[in-house]
Length: 370
Picture 1 (tube, rainbow, N blue to C red):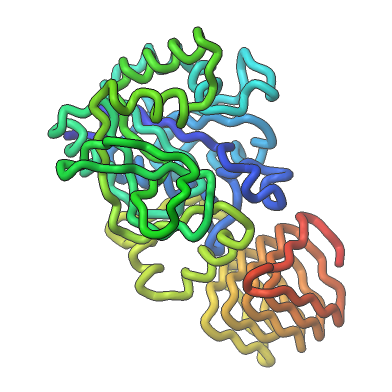
Picture 2: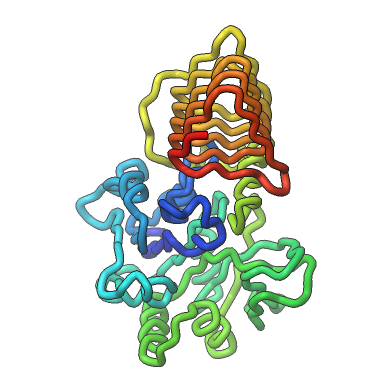
């Protein structure tokens, strides 16, 4: 099946409460990741690589940085006369009401109805993976499914706000649980699904007429026995951003060469907005080990096991270890930083000592002076 028969819809703000520190001034979709990317780059690139050339991004609030990042969609080859990238800020709803998938989809119901595509791919932004949606669509059509839920086998260590799937031998979904009591290896729903467009319109209209707003409960769980729900297992690398700790760990996993090569494959790349910078300059006193360094940096200190975004400056005598230092942050001389997440445009003065823990990294908010 060809991806041009699929309309992609990305929810840019779902899950913002998971990492309030990073989403106070931006959407979940525009949270920086991996030294040069934003979280939306992953679902958007996955769609484009799968041949989907019509993508709607639904926003709620604090979306200035998201719109600046996406622009016309040129970086993803979505700047087109027909189809391409569509950005939908809140319309017809107050921000108070514009917080669930149902209300967001209801706001663009006419856009969905007027789209020629037969299928709709729904995706959140807080899952990091590189997936071929064409394989999911092929399975969806083969099974004559009404909806196909993408899942992975994962270990749930404690109760979390997620869905798990009970499956038959043919991968048909028999039961969907939310916040399961059982812990251990489960079929974890990745908040990505392909659904027949007419059925999606039916679900939206029905929920709105009955004043229901929870997509997971009122659409998925409520209808699993009434329609043909199937599941597709994704076996590649993936991580969900569910907390500041999981954000830190997902970034640190990029130090693993195998994971990095799988996630950022040359054959199916993850695209992002390119900022033209000079190459990074390393001073005579610098020492860098096992780290990812963006362009345009000036490094005169020591960096180890860290992710350094574009335009960062690190002074002489400074030691940065196990840290995430975001764009255009300036760190003075003779500082010691360990297990720190430093947001954009921060100034850290000379001789500062900032220490966190792997289980509890310290976050420094955007544009702070420390």
